[in-house]
Length: 230
Image 1 (cartoon, helix red, strand yellow):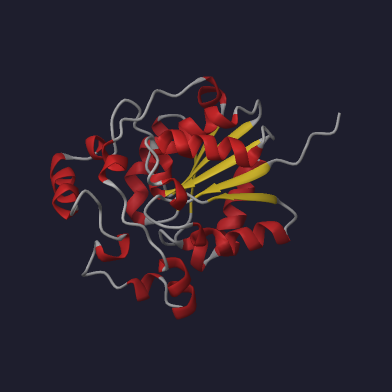
Image 2 (cartoon, rainbow, N blue to C red):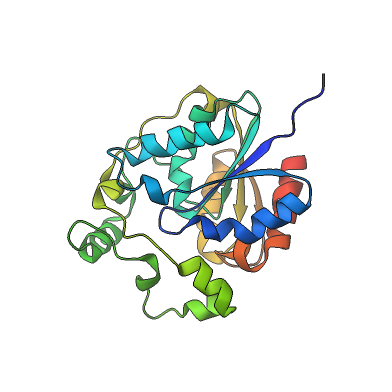
């Protein structure tokens, strides 16, 4: 029996846009990989963001054998996506991502001081654009190419607070039976990668930065494919 080539489903952080995947997608497709990209922006006003994300993932993959890659804050939604996709052969890749926190919300998963900071940032029930969160950090240092920076930062959402306060459900069978891979890109996610290893994830690291899939897509692709082929 010939096994179907898996679809690599790329899921961006809710704070960013699908443009964060443009460079990596091009490299993967040039390498002969089948790629799907989930755009979360149209889903942010849904009554349940989690449910909308999971339904959209199932619709994109159509039950095909799948590799699911989630970046940053998308990590919290990977269990639900895994169960929605429902493949018998599933690899779930956390790319410099938060670990899932079933049974609690985004805000509830944070240390108290960080949760307070997030609440104080919210205005009129929405979080401000992510590129305004850290005024002391120059995004030109992270994304030095001006055209690339403009594409990545264009259309960043102001997320409704209901997304931050939504309690995420417990994972199901597909998540539990999947192979879990953690790919660390930045020093900021060192402790998260260590916790992932304690949970049984296969962990690999790259000395890069949080948006390396934008700025160094070939290196990130090599890291991803080598992990999948192990």
